[in-house]
Amino acid sequence: VRDLSASGNIEQADVVTRKLVILGDKATVRAVATMKVANGRGSSDEKRLDLTFHCTKDGVEWKVSTFLPSGDDFAMEVLAADSDEQRRSLLESHAELVTPALAAKLVSQGRAGMNRADFVRALAAFRLAAEVGELLGDKRGMALALDLAAGVHNLQGNYDAALELAGRALGAFFLDKE
Image (cartoon, rainbow, N blue to C red):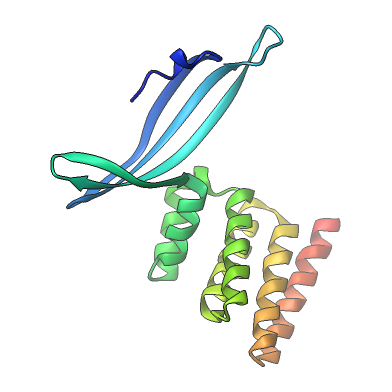
């Protein structure tokens, strides 16, 4: 880990490894950096950077093949889980990543699936986004995800499922108004 405080406006930086998984010649590392950054007004602001690095072993050295915000990586991991039980377990064990940003990323993944006519993936993403909204008490986010899932069912001709989800979306939306 490089000393980030030498970069000029970073006064202090602490880096904590939150996850380290090594499987053969592949590794996943989640690191969270908390920095005090000079703001130019004589004081400093605290910034937090949470990234997940995917690495491959090349001989004796590890090289970063990709990195992305941990929330984005987590959204893909939750969507790739094999079962609802695995998804729930991931959501429970990574509570710090269960945020409105996760729900937004899942909605984005669902829209991408819908645009590709990958309705199974779109419905899974929207269902997860609704679940995250419910966990967070975000009725508006939950309503959006349920409404989008209803739209997918409508595109597939599953009108009963579409109506049921649209009704739940309206209910969640009106609960948010109270």
